[in-house]
Image (cartoon, rainbow, N blue to C red; front, side, top):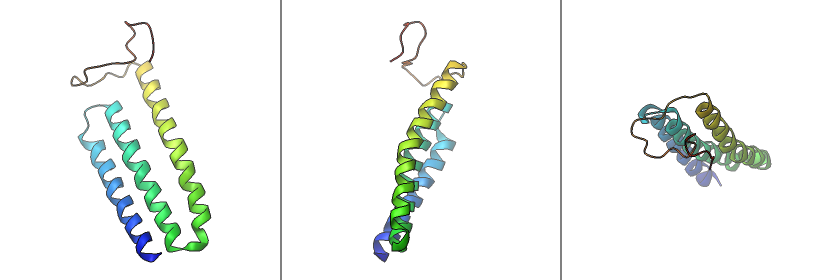
Length: 108
């Protein structure tokens, strides 16, 4: 149990670090949201479950917390990106497709 916990925490730290690096390297808000959400969700999930393996008395609590993070982080990221687009925050010049383009008249 101890080794599994340490491995999961290490994986979580690596993914959280990659998410932080993505915040610095991505060109616009939308790419930063996508990068940080995917990497830090997996990072937080792995770290929290790893703590549950290190302390088995907390395992059920950590599973509940990790499940809550898995359900809420992508939804909140999507809502932030959609609200930012509606407020007119521009996309990067490198972005080739805008699925929410008002010229098409429909949101996909």
